[in-house]
Amino acid sequence: RDTLGDVPLNKDVPCIMLAQEFLDCMPVKQFQYTDLGWCERMVELDPTKEGPHHLRYALTRGPTPHSQVLLNQEIIPGIPTSPEINAGVEVSPDALQSAQEIGRRVSISGGAALIIDYGNNGPSVDSIQALKKHKKVHIFESPGESDVTAHVDFSAIKKAALDGSTVDASMAAAAAALAAAGSSEKGDAKGNKESPRQAAMRVVEEVKQGNKAALRAHGPTTQNDFLHAMGIRERAGQILESATSSQAQRLEEEYVRLCSPDEMGTLFKVLAITPATIAAGTAAGFPPGSEVERTYSAPEESLPGVPQLDPNALSAGAASAGAASERSEGEPQCAVQRRQPA
View 1 (cartoon, rainbow, N blue to C red):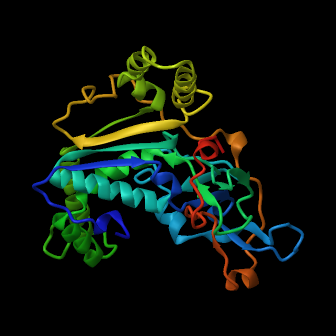
View 2: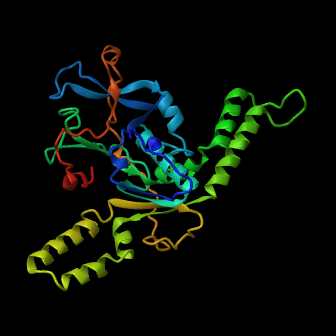
View 3: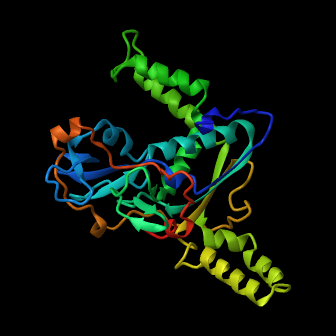
């Protein structure tokens, strides 16, 4: 199957989904705030030919359709409302679409989804990193031959998954009515106070709210808190009772790697999507009060200034700054390195 949406769905069979380091390999789009608004960060040929990779970042000459559509609180809850110049934000439309499909499937067939990945409970600025042959390399080095990943925005994923249950016939009909209504905000000639556009928007919101009630999100919580709530310490103790000295040493090292704040313990987050019948605070692994706070990168992590796009380079094939995970044939996933913060 090419996409999750291509997988057959049977409403009479519960759907169990595990997304382990799935969303971090989705392509991302980067945006940078300028005096013109949110511009998109792209990649173009380096006309100076001074860089070792013959590529460089460049900004569009103004806001793009992607920045105008994606950068709002309805899609990215943690987007800054009053950004400073050179502030940045990273968005993965493909990851959001996958989260919507996950929510849609759970709302239709029941079951549950467990999402485990590295990231934050909020948007990042510039978390893209590339690894090749188990070593971190420049993002522009050997395009298509590196493992490229980016931090997951769990606040946006959570919202997208809950909104995913709105992808049904009613939502499609409301969207069609909205498109047909145009941009008019006035009532019709018959004296109705609600314009066609307003009516369509109301239907959209009613469908969204009605379907949201059918789903519940648990978390995100840290991997450390999730694993301890699931009994990792107790299980490790049981295994140690019959382990050899070498096995015990390996077990301790793996336990530290999974749970330590200096390793994967806090960088990795866990989120569950279930039917609303699973009450808040009752899902295994998500005790009350375990949800991490929403974050956004500090201003000092703002992106550096970059030149505007060179029209000649653009016509030669400038591309979005984000990139999907592209591994060489036969090359193993660099699990250890890719879990390090960007």
